[in-house]
Length: 561
Figure: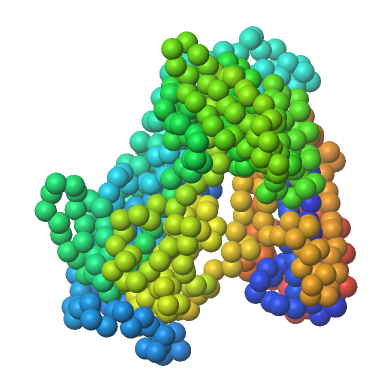
């Protein structure tokens, strides 16, 4: 099942403000937010990987042109630069224009864009190229979800019968499914590595540490260390699974997403601690493969980060019909792995009163409580930078801020390590934004226009503010909020596939791109969508949005065709 309702929250203050709708944070006279759900089978590029990572060749070669320096209005003000850097020996000449610490999706995106801009670039990686996304996240999880989606389709006798199809009982080979995920990760990792090498990016192997301004050392444990210099440095070290205190992870019966992606077993009954994106996606995989799932959520409702209306619909289609139960408003204070024939035990307490609530005994437990920045050992003390809950503080241009509130010159941090938006495609966008800055073009990324997706079946996606967030903002700033909704239940293409129920996903990019580019509702409603297509549901959504201002003046002369 992969289609259905889409909701839009559009705010309008005055006719002038409304005329600038879908501008996100770029225009302070207009406030808008999209809250979308949309679907279709997903290309792994959602995670921010460039086309080269999928084996497509590129005509790019590294240019020998010199970097263009930032104009004076964008150069660092000497009075605003940390005094602690004055004696650390800033290099007079450099090995590279740009060094990136971390070869995940964010580092990869920055490296390729740097080559396009003519920068001599190196990337340092202490583990494997591809980072979390390619090796332990986006890519292998989508391989498992592709399997769960096919299984659900084959297992839906009613759906198949409605299409006039007869299918024998569906089964699966666990090792074959695991191999599919591992092989995909290996393929993408190799393509990503080869793409950087072919474009002239130097891949330096080892753990990177910042020694001082524009200076980095790297090397493997037990091997000689190397020191390299660069005009600019980007930290892109990503994150690791967060495991709360009291939880003992053995990698077999109490696991994180890193372990779960290997699919070494399919337990009969698994508890999932956390009902965010990670927990929901794994519940989709495990229930499709025959597991019973129990969610443990600290807040009072499942999917607490979602728009409330979308969360309710998601619970109706993703939770209630499946072999899933849940405990909300509780903490798992202690989880003990299975041992000597005894099951995994989970001790629960009330999240508010802290009184003992229950003890569960299950076959396995997956800890899906989010991710923590991987910033230890970076040498931040050498540049007087203090992390905040592990995150490296940055400004809106991803420039690193030291303990005194001053900018550290020529040092940037992108992706999960800065905590602004812990999504792979956000990391890539931040990296590209930084490269734009160091090559002379000021650029501030509009994070409000970056979509997020949960690749369940059906899939969920959203961009901008939730409706409650939009209403709170409207109350503070004195503008109106208008809500437009539409459904796939009247969409010809969705009904042709017998998929009128659920949430839509991949269509989200039409909305997020409109927000990023500052396109107004009044203008986008005149766009023409092919019929019959799923994208028509957005066409209906845009047309139904109530705004007070008129559309822009159309092109004065028709275009000959």
